[in-house]
Figure 1: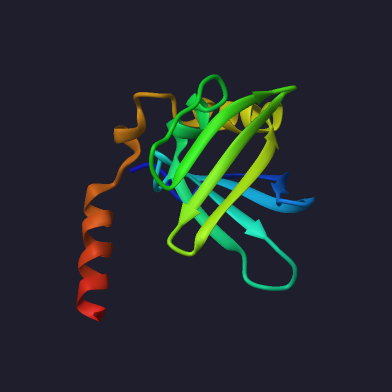
Figure 2: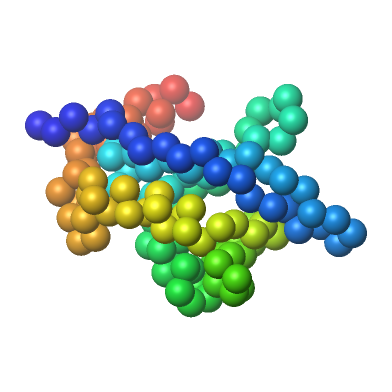
Length: 139
């Protein structure tokens, strides 16, 4: 069995686009072999707990070259080497600008580790089912 505890992390900075200003936000991008289809973005704002969003790795990759996403997360190139990421929740939405080269570099590492189309070979269905059943038992 593969060691599925490996993760790929990248520290980067996004710009939160507010109506009257731009605020720099530290973001940690994480790719885990446990969930090879997903990317986790942890937004660190001050001393509070990070705000974590999980979305499809392919959504982020596709958003480097074309507008994509029709749900809670949309990604689109906006020129000048920038990508716009919009996160929407029932409590509101946030619009971020990120460096496309930084995102591309992160994604290159994830695809080198788990090539596109090979994600299913990394899934451990027995472990996922056990974890799901354990969560149900705790509820």
